Amino acid sequence: MLADTNPSRKGLRFLKRVMYSQMALRDAVLILFGKQRPSLSFKVLAEPCSVYINFTVKPDMAQEFASYINLAEGLSPVPIRCLAGEDPALLLTLNIYEVSGIVKGARAEWSTYVSDSAGIPRYMVLEARASQGSLDPVNFFTKADRVEHTMANGSVESTIASNDGELFHSTLRLDKNHPLAETAAEWIAANDYIYWRNGVCDRSWYDASLFDATVYSIPPEDVAISDNTHWARFVQAHPRHVLQYDGELDLVLSPWFNLQNQ
Image 1 (tube, one colour):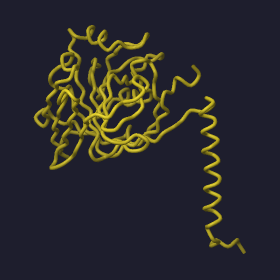
Image 2 (cartoon, rainbow, N blue to C red):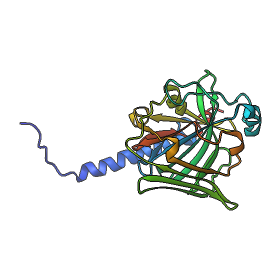
Image 3 (tube, helix red, strand yellow):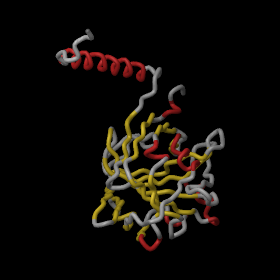
Image 4 (tube, rainbow, N blue to C red):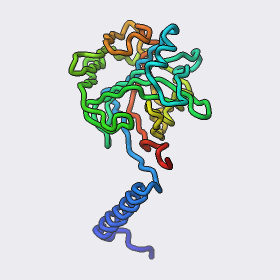
C-alpha cells in the first residue's frame, strides 16, 4: 500500500519556513559580499494601464539634445524602431504607470535609447519621478513627487507636477476598437538592460506579459497633452505614437547590475 497522503501539514509548514528562511539568509550573505546579484519583483499594474508616449526629437535639436542630457562617456542617443515596419527615429519616451512590489505607486520616466557594447539599443532613463520615494543610482533617492495616474470613465488621465506647478498632463481616451500595435522586437529587447545617465544599468527579465502583450495605438484625436517640461523644446509637439498596454506586466529586476564586479 502507498504511504498515507493525508498526514498533518503542520510539520511541512514548519519545515518550509525554516528551509526557505535559511535560503534567504544565505542569499543575503552572498549579496552582501558580492557573490550573488539581488533580484526583485517589479509588477506593472493593469489598472491604471501603462502608457508610452513616444516623441520624436526634432532633427535640428538632435545635437543639442545629446549635449543637454550629458550622458556617461561612451553613451550617446541612437535611433530605434518602436513599432514593426517603421523607420528608426531618435526618440524621447515618457512611460507613465503604476507598480507594485518593493517599489510602489505611480511613476513617470523620461527615457531615450543608447547602444550597448554590442550595438543593441537599450533604454536610458533620463529623469524619473514617483509618487513614492525610491532608490536610483544617479540621485541615490528619487524623492516623492506629485505623480497621478488614474483610469475612469473610459480614459486614463496623468498629471506630473513639482513645487513649481504642473509639468505634464495628458488625457487619453481608451477604446477596444483602437488599432492594435505590433511592437518592434528591438524595442522589447531594449528592456533587457535599462541604463541610467551615469552608465549604471539595471538588468531585467520578462515573460509573455511584455513581449506578447496586447498593445493599442491611441490615435491623435483621442490624445490631449499639455507639456511644460524642460524636454518639450527638444521634441515634436505631437507624439509619434501613444501606446497603451492592456494587462499586467511582470518583470524581475537585478538593480545596478554592472556594479557587481567594479
